[in-house]
Image (cartoon, rainbow over all chains, first blue to last red; front, side):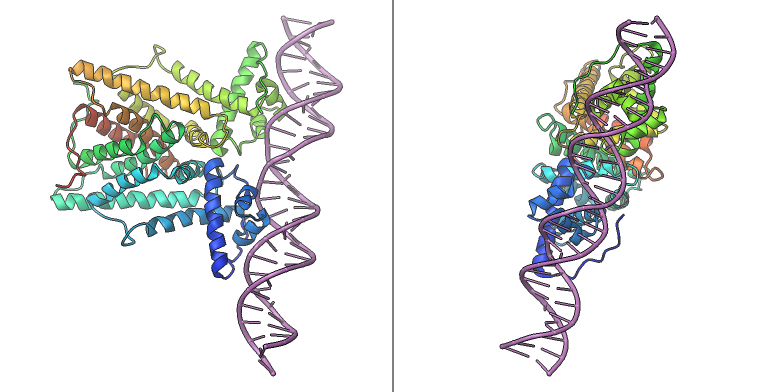
Length: 212
Length: 212
DNA sequence: AACAACTTACTGACAGTGTAGTAACGTGCG
DNA sequence: CGCACGTTACTACACTGTCAGTAAGTTGTT
């Protein structure tokens, strides 16, 4: 189980091959999940045997972890100045991401499948997703604080719930979209929900659920 | 793969045993997912061998389908008058469900894991979840229409997005809650988000994301 | 420049395990 | 009896990980 195998020193073509493997693994884990995504299928895509994959990554568990870290790396590279926008721009960035995701079916599916799968017993991706959500929630709380400061209003207690809810609605819409792409407008719905949730924090109103 | 085996005629104790199996299967599929949830583990819980399970359900695929249908059946039984509330009560019911879910960790996990797993290639639960979300979205659209009618306002175009978003946020919060129960208030956050989304439909406001 | 010593990147074969499904057989109840 | 409910025993297979060996490259030495 996940022998700590050191990563061999990098030769340029080797590095390229590794990246190729990570991409192939993303595709396979995306379409079949981690459990049903065999190493042989990944190996076939890059023209090698499954033993070759293990040579590079040591174990399948380790490969998954590298796949997830790889995603984060390339995500940040996509940004101009290598860092997340803050304040209200952070929320605008989320909406842009939702739009971009509509043409990244494979990656969306990989994340949707793997994040849910990670809550199962002894899943190798669990720690990654725990950390990821923790960080993202904090991120959004910070953004809310910035916005509140700008407007000179005190930070409401609802920011915690709103931060979690914004991430949740994006993830949940992805699952529905993957199941029925014709019925669900991923980006439009995400935008609508994010606007609603941000509004509810900055300018709260009485609950429509309370009896009239 | 899923031989169409008919369900044998029902004797009372047999029916009870079947129910027991369905409960055990929910637990196992919940904690390990469908793919990594072996029949033997389910069989152990009810004191029988895995072949016994197959005698009752024909195949593992079929068992999963029965598990999912079973959930729906018992869900409806929980309601007093056997039918879903409508209008604004429908949304209140969702919030109540979210509160109830906080003490139903196993079932929540089963649904979270299985719904995401179902988007993978050739998953036996796929048709079920497609149908389920389609029905639920329609359900919520209907509820919105009722509420709009009551208030004498025309039904806004946003109901589609809001219906999907409400389901999405509930599902997404469940995943985060399963990963970090101490950091995420499942019920409170669900209530907050649902209120925000219903408000946004019934009484829209300018987007806070638009440049000031 | 040439050669030895070493490292990296694999392959092919195989062990080991987990697991779904089948077939044949028992056993007790209506 | 005859059927439903099981068990035991077995087949078949998918998959991960190990291992020995090979070819190709890299480094150091003279």
